[in-house]
Image (cartoon, rainbow, N blue to C red; front, side, top):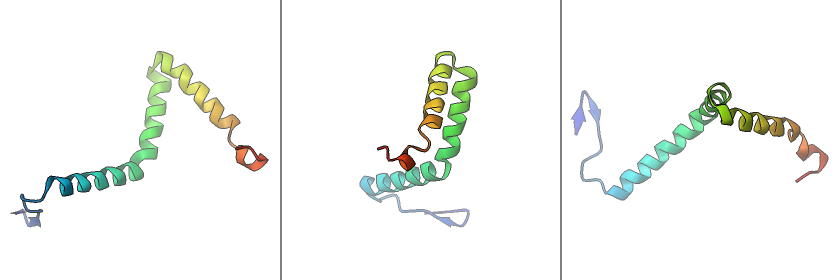
Length: 75
C-alpha cells in the first residue's frame, strides 16, 4: 500500500507482528520523552493537585535525602 509516496506494510501482516511493532514504538517513545513527561507530571502534581502536592513534596525530599546513599555504602 502506498500513500503520498510512502510505502506502508501490507494489510495481511499478522496481529502478533503489529503488536510487536507497537511495543517497540512505545518503548522508543518512553525512552525519548519519558523524563520530560515525568517532570511535567511532577509539576502538575505540585501546582494543581491538593493531596498530590504533599505526596510529591515528600517524594522530592526523599530523593534529595537519598541522593548520595550509594557513595556511603548504603544499599
